[in-house]
Image (cartoon, rainbow, N blue to C red; front, side, top):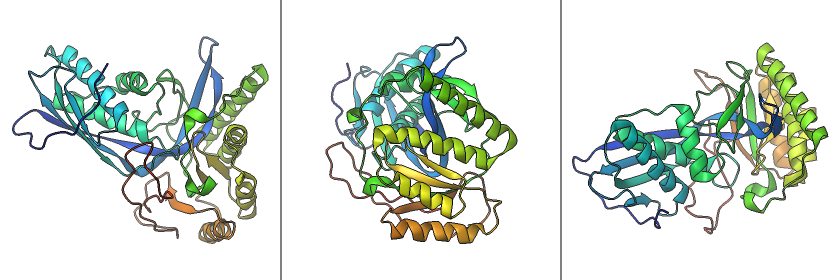
Length: 347
């Protein structure tokens, strides 16, 4: 058991240090219960990658101190400090060095409670920083294993960005769907006014064989969408998954959001299945893309759904879209801290 985290003392001198970074995501394209290679049911998800926001960690190792002597700033990041302790033990074993304590510092701009993987981002950044202080670079599979031990379930942010069906409670890949998602333009927004979602308070929905068959059909369609670069098919999968997720999350604006997507000619919508962030998905090759995106933003505003960020899932050399340029404030540091409506950094 790791003691309560306390603020780290400044000044590291010449002690071994390391840094690590991890991105966030924009909710899920698909989430449900699937069958693994042995026919066993597994909770799984496919996340929508998002460049930009993320968590950065710095770790200063203090050789000679007991392993439980870990400090962290901000002091409430208990999952990250748990991950740092696990990573220190892993790295000490790999290098033949004694495990020791140290100081962990975290910074980042991932909004909390929107379903964007803020805690996983912290955890992965912490693990990478600890490994770096030992001169190591841990493989994704190892980071996933440590992340699940630290927070019970994690997102696949430690992997190489390929679209994967990921068993979030087991930290393993059920299927690599292909080399990359079809290119997308995403108009992000926040449902429920951007209020954070307490995932522990969500009802647990029973899943029967009919549900599993439906999820497996969506998995097959998503695999085909990735293989053929079919944005429209991907949009249908994401919308169907979002509609199922709504049964748990509620999201009274979901029908409005879906209607907006149809009217502006979007491929579909996606949501965070454990938060309030959502996105309207566009094919970047569609005729009149700029006009469609503007119409979408106007419609969101008219219905009181706050737009957050318009972004792409592919690399561009210049900004090609008009979107809100909201810039967020500091990330709240604790579950009981009053939160402002989320505003994501603009592209």
